Image (cartoon, rainbow, N blue to C red):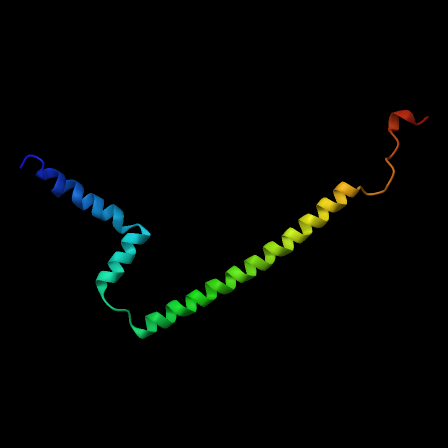
Length: 92
């Protein structure tokens, strides 16, 4: 009986904290009941849209990787231009 406060105080606090996590939201949605066909279509459209965004980002990352490789090759090979003379060594 002495530890009953834990159930009545910490229980609701823990439940509230869990409800803000993705797992808690999924459990709440599951308890609400079945999903309608329009909600399913909306979710499928969202999944397709997110997949397209991921493909576009993958393509951009590949392009950036190619540019980085080119830049590294140019830096390691050198520009082939002779060094400029030092200003202090030239006669005035």
